[in-house]
Amino acid sequence: MNISREAKLAFSPMYFCFGLCFFWKAFASVYTVTVFSNSLLQIIIPAAALLIWSVTRTSRTPYPVVWASALIGMLATVVLDFAVAGPLANTGASGIIIATTSVIIFGVYALFFLFWAEMYVLLDITSAGLAISGSYVIGSLGYFLLRPLDPMLCFGIACCLPFLSGWSLVLSRKQAYALRFAPQTEEQENPAPAFKQVITNKLFPWHIIIVISAFTLAAGICRSDTSTSDDLFAVGLAGGLFVLFILATVLAHTKINIYLAYRTIFFIMTISLLAGMLLGDNPISAVLIRISHTLSSIALVLFLCDCSNRFKLPTFPVVAFARTCTSAAFLIGTLIGTNALFGLKSDTFVVPLIYGLTAVIIIIASYSWLRGTRDSLSSLDMSDHTSDISLNLNSLSPNNQPADSHTDTNMQPDASTEIERALQTFIEIRSNHLAQEYGLSKRETDVLLLLAWGKSAKRIEEILTLSSNTVKTHVRHIYAKLGIHSRAELDALLYEDAPFNI
Image (cartoon, rainbow, N blue to C red; front, side, top):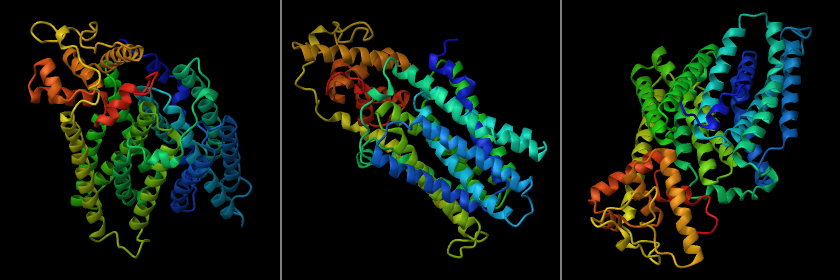
């Protein structure tokens, strides 16, 4: 079985150590005074980190910040130990100490979530998906395996978890960075764009962030009165399902199609919401929503990493912004679920109404997503935007069928200048590389090559002597295999490594 070098490295234990940080936070949540502080910090910390990033525009979080955060987390856990099961237990100050240290732990966890996202973007999508979902499984298993042990022993183990997670983060990030960018160094990276440029980028994943935030609000209602054990069980189960999905793609010698995964998760999310709307406060619907919430969180991080990876969006502000939005939605849902927002009674029609509205939003977003693909296909009917470079039709085979596009350059324009020859070579290499990487057929590769030159659907029909529906079917299959849904994303994917401006 042929597995990419990145996929092999994803099996390194270091890559799964976000699970240690997740378990550490879950363990501490048992001793929290209120869930509100946790949810609020998941908003404040990413928002503050985003503000700092917008000022410094540092492309990578410095390693000393990681080590300092891990040290603070360790000290907070030790102090929490003394307040819960040590000498300070049942004293007048124990309540204040528990509340303070819990806040610190939740804040450090929110930072580590962003730190690990910076690492995952350095991996290919298969490796990142395996590492993220596997970490959730490890965090869930760790919680259930250690919970029966003596509390003092559990605290002793827990205080080491932030340091181990930070240590593995530093080592794995260096390894992944060297793998992806060798022989470059971090100092050679281009300066990050301003945050305004990031959110106004036409490739910024607004639609995904909005949909997941809407669903997270509904999930916050469901999870407002659940125990840590219930949550960890659903998280572990969802992570295990995603691991199985990834392993299936690896065994099938294919890459994860993030759009296909999202459409599947959209369906699961909708079903879980409809179940919650029809069944009400039912254990089955509650478990479905919690599982769907975890799946949507995993897929969201993967999609954001994929956008940063392929379309050159800076990872930190994109993930921090998405995290702020989803955490705010979760907090609102929690307040509704506990009847703490505007006096809404969650045991009336409010919850089914919110579930139903969220399901409608997801369905509309899914349709809009597919409609975006259809609109992008219609845009192929526009005139060629590379009409200044003519296609040498006379070089096609006698029956007007192109030769093998993987080896023949007959489909390439008759370049007469150095830049045209360089562009011709680049497009051929880049198109064939994408075709091989994502498993495109010969005919799909022919169509991709013509799309790379900006040819309209009409011109592709003429060159390949295909019907309009056949061309659009090929383009739809190409988009699905490449995990894109618009012409802008196709151009970004094709020309991301071009040595000149297109």
